[in-house]
Structure formats: C-alpha cells, structure tokens
Image (cartoon, rainbow, N blue to C red; front, side, top):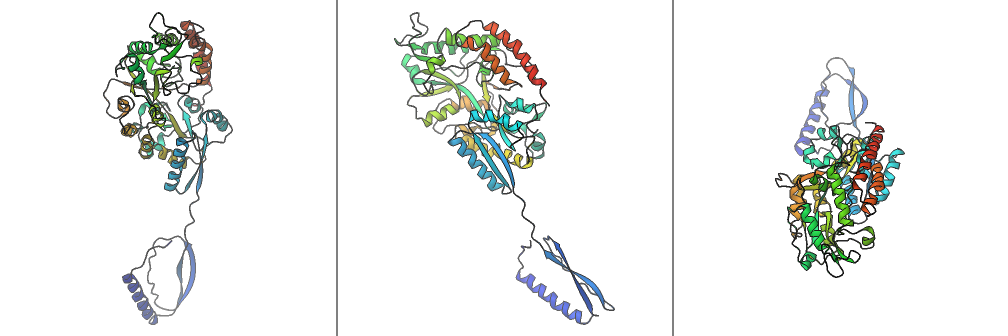
Length: 494
C-alpha cells in the first residue's frame, strides 16, 4: 500500500515533467500505447520516460495497479495451566491480554484448572492428542512427560533468540533439563526457610534461632516450645503428651516428592536419587537417619503434630495457636500480611547438618508441547511469560519468587518484615552470593507416582507411629523403588 505523502516540491517537479513530456511527444512520431495492467504490491514506484524514435510502433505501457497486502491471518494458540481463583488467575489473564496487545497476530485461549484437577486432566489431554501449545508442569512430574516426548527442546529457540540458561536460576533450569536439552522453563520459584512466632518464643523464654543454627539446635528449640496444658515442655519428665496445647513445629512430610526434605537429607549427607536419576539412595544412612529423626519428632519427642492433632486447625502457624515454627517459602509472608496476623515473626534458613546448611528451592515451569500446532507462536508466549519484565511484576506481588537471579530484589518486602527475609529468600539465590548457604533444587526421576505409592506402603506406618523399623522400611523402599524406576524408564521414548 502506498502511504508516502508527496511534498509541494515533489508535486511541482512531477507537474513540470508532465508538461515537458507532452511537448516532446508532439515532436515525435506517433506512439500507440497498449495498456497492460499488472497487479503487484509495491512500496516504491520509479517513473521513466520512454522516447520512441522512427516510425509509429506499439509499445506496452505497464500500469502498476497497487494492491494492498492481505492482512496476516491471526493464529490461535491454547495455553493450559493450573491457577487458583483470585490473584493467580487474574495475574495470568492480564499477562495473556498484555501478550496479545504486543502480538496482535496471536490470539491466546487460556484454560485454568484447580491444581488437583489439572494434575488429573493433563495426562488425559496429552494422551488424547488434544495438545495445548503451551502448558504447565511441576518438577515432581515433569520427567515423566519429558521422557515420553511431550515437550520441545527449547535450546534451539533460546540460542536463536540470544537467551542463555544462565539468565535464569540454573538449579531450577536443571529440574527440567536432560541430556543437554531444555524441555521447560521455570515460571517462578519457591525458596524455603523456617518461620517462627516470636511471641511464642518470648512467652516461654526461648532464644530465637540463629541464622547458622544446626539440626541439634532445631530439635532442642522445638522441644522447649512444645507445651502441655500445664505449661510443661516436652523435655520435662512429667510432660503429658496426651494434652499438648502447643507444638514446636508443624509437621514436615519427609518425602522425596516434597520441596523441604532435600534440605535436611543433603545436610545429613545424601540426596534422594543418583545424579543420573536411574537409582534411589533410600537405604543411604543419611536418608535412614532423616526418616528416623522425623519419626522421633512426631512419635517420641512429640514436637510435631499428628494428622489427628492438626485436623480442622487451618494453617497451623498463622493461626497463632498450635505451632511455633513452620518451614515454608515466601508465600508465608504474603499470606501473613494478607491475613494481618497479630504476632511478631521472623525467618531463618533450614538448620545445618554435618555436610553444611542448604537453601532448597523448587518451581513449576511452562513449555511448548512437542505436538503444538503453532510452535513459534507458543514460543513467543513462553518467552513473554518467563521474561525479565514479566517476572519482575510477578515478584513485586510478593507471593511468588522469580526465575532470575538478577531480579531477586523484586520480592523484598517494602516494610522490612520479617527482618531476615532477605537472608533466607533473596540473597542466597541472587547474583554474586558468597554466603554459607548451599543452593539445592529438586529433580524428579521418571516414575514418581509409583514411588509415592511405595512410600505410602512402607513409610506411612512409620510416620503414623505404628512401627519403629525405619531401616527395614528403607531397605524395602530401595529394592522396590529401584525396580519401579527401571520399569518406568523402560517406557520412555527419548
């Protein structure tokens, strides 16, 4: 389409040329013009004078008929993700609108589900071939989909567009990578620590935990904070464990499918799985020690509540009645402020063990599916959702953390509460961190669902105080777990 405006000077020049051409034509032999229309899209028209000498002859005069290019067809893509009602759905809905404003050639149809519904429906959707262009996956199940070719390798797209793995928190990128390929990209992060109710500590005269506390310190502190109806601590010989009114700490399910336990197992000396994710370490002494610790904390020392003791209590820490400490990520600060809790609180890292002190992190991710009808447009949406600008906005909401070490400051509380928030949730995952905390992110093997079933079979009796044979349970977990891993890996198509 011709849109260039003609200036007065250009108009005068064109008129002069037209008059000159007419005079010249009067002195020349007659020329018969044959008009030929040619349709084409042009951006510039170059005019030339054609002077024909000699006898009359026919010349073809090409008249260019300017045809406006047809508008580019708008592509529709589908985006599926779990999303809680409220801030999360509103946030991602707004992201989609912002993306479409920047990319008017793409329409995004977004589908939200509750967390549980999404985890149930995703396998069915993928198996039925109704593949969304972009979808969500959690670290605990990602490898099951990756090994069966559900997601693209995004590395070629990243390399083409100048996006580096190092732009993101690499430990989180590793959760969704295999064999040098990057199958999903973290959409946020969850960074863990131990929250404590300072008022409860003050009530019983217990010292606040130090940033460099140990597992032994944790046990001693939690024991002192566990009180019966007479105010006696769990360390008192007369403590009545049938009338506990306050527990030292909320229960931590010591499972390989949880975000927090790896911080304990690594501090004690072992990770859940081998580096290649082909075998488990369930019978490692450090794993057995951690499982037995948890059994004692709940069933012997009694400073962690059983399910029956916690039922109907809501959030055990934020209700300011049942527990003095709770391990959680930065969302706990967000909800504490949303709910306007009336007690003072702070946070420290997970306690240290013989192998050091760890800062565990986890996340979900988005990826373009391998069978996406519109991979390029899906990649554009994925880039938008995981970009620095979008991530900074997510961080500024203070509920989720970000996927990039360069913008960790976005999640810092503006009111400075809790005091050590930055020491736990921000600095260890920021660029240039040189502190003592060791960063660790969880990576799931193929076949996590089978392993969870085995865990329920062998560990539930231990953790519900029905058995003390932790070593036997660990041995069975190792034998059956490695068998399940082998069977699951055999089904992979990568």
